[in-house]
Amino acid sequence: MGPKLTGGEFIVILTGAGISAESGLGTFRDKDGLWTRYDLAEVATPEGFARNPALVHEFYNARRANSREARPNPAHEALARLRRDWPGDVLIVTQNVDDLHERTEPAPPGGDGPSGLIHMHGRLEGALCAACGHRWPAPARMAPADPCPACAAAATRPDIVWFGEIPYHMDEIWFALRQADLFVSIGTSGTVYPAAAFAQDAGRAGAWCLEINAEASAVAEDFDAVLIGPASRKVPEWVEGLLAALSHPPG
Ligand code: OAD
Image (cartoon, rainbow, N blue to C red; front, side, top):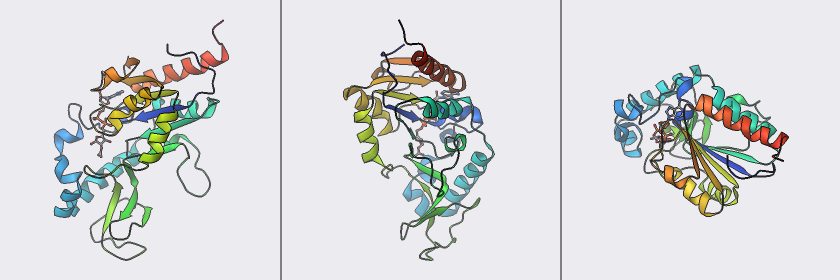
């Protein structure tokens, strides 16, 4: 399925909560999803944080604990294999704030995340000072009175992009979408922008676009093909097919 490949193609992959669902981390908008149980305006906006920082910290402390208990599933593992074995470049842009992608790869020296992985909505494992912008590794539990290690202000927040804020690394992402030969979206409902427009952006610039999701997303018509099913099965199948096509090019 899809275009004829030589191996030199640049693959950009967008992931969302659906890729971590089978690791036991809840999605946002499915039945029993986080946004059916919590008020998004109270826990995922700067205004909600200003009103009740303790509540917001509790919400993300709980999610951090869940994320630390979770393990990568075969979909994360398959993408790590693709990044290892695909001869061309592979960039993963994730909307997820868990660290399941990086836990499939050996940590690079220097304590940074692996290159080729962008957390556009931030990370549960990051703390950010709202006063001076300093960033440091998040402890298991954060609280409003925690002082910033750099400026001592009690303005600690999770390093998460909230509604009304601008996602991280957008220039780099848009540049990559314009260069991409293949764009693949995995486990995202296609309801939150700018990520929901990535298939349109990449497609207009010439990429072949594939969606892999449990159901057709809100933007499924922007893709050249849609694979419906659980990420833990569909992503390994897709990666296997891609790598097999390289080792056995069609006659
Ligand atoms: P959603 O909860 O909106 O969508 C998850 C998608 O994954 C749905 O389309 C499901 O059908 C699909 N899905 C569920 N289980 C799956 C499985 N096992 N395999 C494959 N697909 C599955 O989550 P996102 O699209 O990631 O932002 O949400 C986007 C953003 O909205 C999040 O990053 C977060 C949220 O509010 C912020 O908090 C800023």
